Length: 406
Image: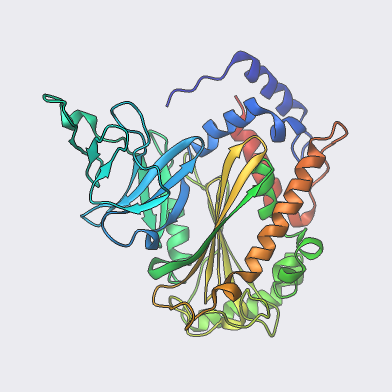
């Protein structure tokens, strides 16, 4: 994908980076400027690995769903060989969308405009009334696609960043929670009137949890500084280790652990005593998943990968958060709730109870991020300093400035 930075934007970025206060929130233009937003899309979302969804959404050959991001549309499809592929949703005839719906099942992918038909691997199989056309030369385009622990990742770049760290971190963490054999119990989208970086920064700190998320802060030790919860986290981790579940922590998000290596991190945490999972009352929500034989005193794990894919795993359910930029001040938070693949709704879990905590939390996040964006838009906005509980947010902003540099 060809992309050339204009001289005017280059000069503006250089000036902004030179005047950016160290250790503080970003300058206003980084959250508001349409040209900088387009530069972000090119530097981050079209170059890095993004989670598109979960394999349980396409269990059978011919199952597919659309993944739309950064002005592009992909068809995530399971082929007859069982492989998951990411095909560009752009017909090779005159460019129409091949799949207009969001999800579906097809033996062939047929463009609704002129009827060009592609197989599940993207190869053109039929073009009406066009004798002599070289079918092999008109296959759908593809992008990089990988699967780890049931999570489907895609990358638009011709040369994708090394996926090794993501594969290692996700496999040794979410793999132990049984995510490869999980299923999506519910999916919801929260449209936020805020820049994608404000959404990401908010997710990476819990300094706001006590005033903004009392339902979460009631049970999760994350709402306190790390140094005050060492014993709580050790108790839960020790119980997991006693079951043979030792999940190593990594701290390489967002920068990665080497040149052109996609970033990933993993951090273990715990619930307060008397609660074991992220629910309305701290009590279990669904059957245990993966290698867990009990809730291990409220043990749970956070995983971060790439610029927009974040995960939270409890022993009995999981959360997938995908932050999809839609405009300079518009971002969709796509949230997936995972349960064990054999769990039955109404028997093994109640969907309303399963989704209660993270629905009410996401609604609150939408509100506080939109308030944040409105304040940032003010002519009186001045970036303030990050606090000790905003370490990851500060790391993200510093990494962003390095990556966005001309």
